[in-house]
Image (tube, rainbow, N blue to C red; front, side, top):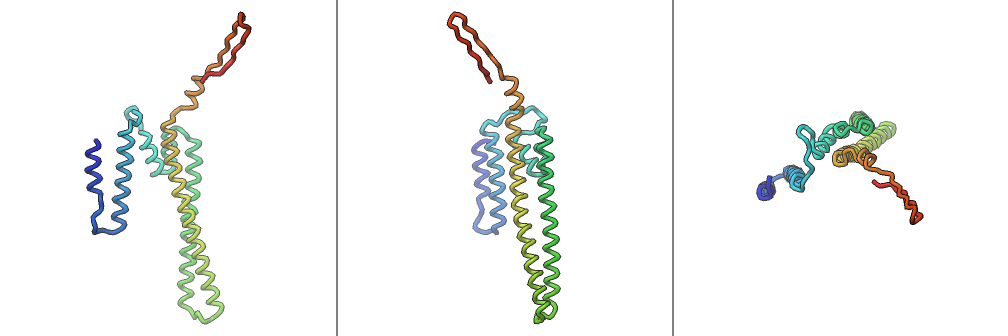
Amino acid sequence: MNLEDFKSFCRVLVPSEVGSIPTHSRQLVVALLVALTWATGALGAEVVPPGTPSPLQRAFRSAAVPAWGQLTNGRSTKAVTLLSVQTYIYARVILETRRAGEAQRQADWLRGLDTDNAVVASALNRAEVTSQEHFDRRRDLLFWAIVAGFYGAIDAYIDAHLGDFEGDLDRDRELFARVDPGGRSVELGLRF
């Protein structure tokens, strides 16, 4: 896609005066994804052999399925760690959602009873507070799930660009020494 095609595509995505906020948000997200994809191609992203996913594709893989990008990069230890953390967070989100739903159902049931009774009113208050605490924990966990997913995508992208940086660095290191008997000097060094 050349620059003129991209500009005309962006003009199409400009929201009209009529439309809902979710429609505008979807158009913005699509425009940002297209711009990111175009920019990585237009800025001279590295050429990858056929059949090998690009760094951007590896980032999208890791964003779609936890640790897929790390596995594609050959970082299995990092993939297992990231998958474990994200699985734990997702399991806690499901657990907190269930607990909040149970507390909310109990509160709804208690509202149907005689709320003038002090015991029922106390139980209703406790159920509502418990429900809200679980919903708050779920919200916090969802935030951390988004952060972990974003971290996984960025990590896969960076690892794909670095490739075998440590191996290249090890191969390029050179220990050298120069001895000049006439000038009575010795030079030692490490070149990398």
